[in-house]
Length: 315
Image (tube, rainbow, N blue to C red):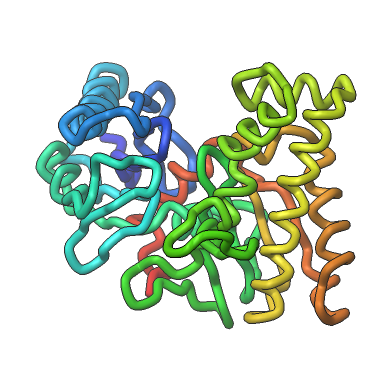
């Protein structure tokens, strides 16, 4: 009898969708098991929970129907979530999902799947994926980033994955890159507030651009629309400035960037590199490699599964 390969349930919770899949120990997805459901800032807490549970059930049902795999064949569940998170409580309070504040996401996944569950920041998962099977293999000082509805990140320093006091280390999306112009908390001055896909589309629209989505912006950028070009260049400048600041602090050798908006144009990476060279406060920073994710849009799921398959890399 053929032995079932080691398999993990991967769950990735973001600002617009939750995705689930089964992932093998060689970092490949089991065919047909990838499912998604909507999330979004307008969803209430119950709707968000239902989307997560429905996606998990759909993945498990398809695994059994098409492959004869049941939950008892799985070695665990890994969950990557937009942050901030609370590792001690297994809870999440995603900035772009307003209805969840201190929500017990790890418990929800464990109860729905019946599996032992590990939760980490989505940026930690994207870094883990790139270390395990992507563009950062063999690196000892590096950052993984995701640029999408929001911006997240994770860090490995001197060969050790960094989680921090609460599990939110590496959350580069909340690095402040603009001066506050009003008192108190202002997310518009953060990297995410300036350079996420959502923020970049909004900025283009403030210039009179009439598109609605990142795909529209990509098309118009390719056609040379001045407003689309200005918005993408602003995004790249902000990312470059943030990377240069992180490099000044922790001396990175490489940064891998994934996420849907990172593919708005092939020019984005050259624009980011140019901005780093332009603003870097000292010359050693200019040597940092900035590369696209090697895992396409599967990276977040591979990283979530890596919480199970590559637990040896976790702090």
